[in-house]
Structure formats: C-alpha cells, structure tokens
Length: 276
Image (tube, rainbow, N blue to C red; front, side, top):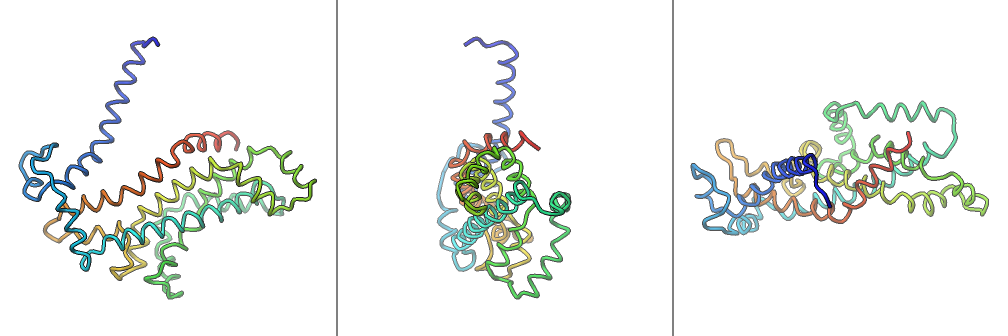
C-alpha cells in the first residue's frame, strides 16, 4: 500500500485529535487510582507513584451516605427500560407516518418534527407540574415516562422505513398479513441498523440525563448516578478521587453498549440519510 504525503498528514492529524479526545478519559482513570495526597500535587503526573483502589473501596464503605450501587441500578433500569419503550413507541409512530395513509398525515408529522427545535429546559416546568399532579415524585414512572415521547426517534426511523421497498409490504398483504404483522415481522427485522443506532442514542441520553432526575426525586435512594455524583461536591471542597471512581463506574455500561452496537452505528446513520 502506497502512502501519499497528504494521507500521512491526515493520519497524523487524526491521531492527534484522537489523543486529545482520549486525554480526559485517561486522566479520569488515573485520578480514580490516585491516593488523595497525590491528586493535589503542584505538578500532576500521569503515572501514579502509589496506585490504589482506596477510592473504589471507600465508595462501598459509604453506602449509607452515598449508595452508589443503588444509583447505578437506578440509572441502568431507567436507561434500559426507557430505551426499549422509546424504540417501541417511536417505531410505531414512524411506521404510521411512513406507510399509512390518513388525513393530515404530513401536517401532523411537521408538527411532531417542529418539536425538535424546542429546548428541553423550556418544558421542564410543565413536566414538573404534571409529575406533581400525578403524584409520581420519587418513582420510576417520573424518571422514565417523560422521556418516551421524542421527535428525533420518529424522524430517524421514518427515514429508514422509507428506504424499505414497498413491494415487500404489498406481497405480505397479498399473503394475508395484517398491518400489525407487517410492522412486527417485516419492518422491524429489516430495520435493525436504525434501531441499534437509536438504541445507543436513547440509552446514552437516559444514562446521562441530569435535569429530570434532579427535579423528579429528592430521596437519596431514588437518585441516579449523574445526580448522585453531586453529593461529593462540597461547598468549599471536592472529593476528586471519589468523583472520578464513580465516573469510572458510570462509564462502564456506556462502553459495553457502544462495543455491542458499534458496527451498526455508521450503517444506520448512513442508511437513514439516503431518502428524505
């Protein structure tokens, strides 16, 4: 294989960019195994002189004050359940907008699509009032249900469904398969790349969400990891070792999900952009 000068320069730039992006993650890992007296040295060093797992041990020892594993379970349950429900509802709506003919379909889809420009911070007060009326504070309903309606998932899946040949659907109709059967047995199996891509985005959004768990819960047992991390932030000081150890634990599920579905990401994004 011949390498031109331009290709070499491109690879060098990509390598530098990759190193810059990985530096915060590497620094997080290093700080999680540093003892407290090494964290605050005037000149920080990348190689720990006395690496230790003390920060991780302290997390489990302080379970009453900071139940990290309970927060971990809350985040995992909320993100996982929310992702499954979000995929189901978004795919049903996307199928209706892409395949079914009904009055006002395009206008309704435009209205749904226009909600993408509304920032989440604008709706936080109405969501708070609704949760208050329903009495859902400190419940999993409050952490999951508000995130189930999203225009992005409907748009992404609709774009993919439009690329599936209608002949397949028509053949199924002739064979006696109903709309529900076509959706479940044909459309969804053919849409695995788009579903996998949306699943990753949805899981990351639910896992990293901070605002909704902050306003929907006030009991420490119902906190999620992003909100629970703030307990280590004191008014005048910050426990960096514990924060970084918790951040390492919080990163693991995201890495697992990404490694499981990474080969679907690019294919799903490319295919969903072929037809508008």
